[in-house]
Image (tube, rainbow, N blue to C red; front, top):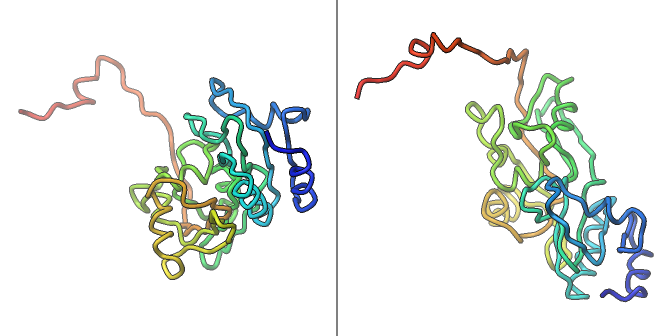
Length: 231
């Protein structure tokens, strides 16, 4: 149980929305992609920006709260929500900035790959992450990042240039090959609990017209369509 006075104090410094079980929006905010997950956090902090993330990380540390981080809530294990703890909800943070001359894109943590693709396509560019458009940028990138361009340009994490991260002590830092390179190594597939990533910078790639579709063969042609190599 979090004291209402503590939540009121946090609210005075918070730009987003704070939700408790008595709020009308609470049940919708705690839902995730996997409908089998039914967890009830004590507080959901829907952050408007990185400054809000810093505020709630400091609050969670001071209150010794269990913390989970929700971006799009797509993870099948339901790790975005926790019982009786604090959910740092980044789903409001959806800014995308494309630098077409540098072929880079900055993406806030609440975006999914479909939104990134929509921002890049007018520039003739594409990112490497995501076979499915509703998959979140954050979870897919930090876990590896298989996508349609993987064979030519690698994983999403291979194309990550930098990340803005809020650490457990409340500091907001930038991790890249030249800054905090040990953290940069860790967040690219090294596991979890290194911090809350609020913004990603990716290398994008020129992509022209793509032809795609399904090739179907009749059953009678199966032997010719699927040749078996001699043993």
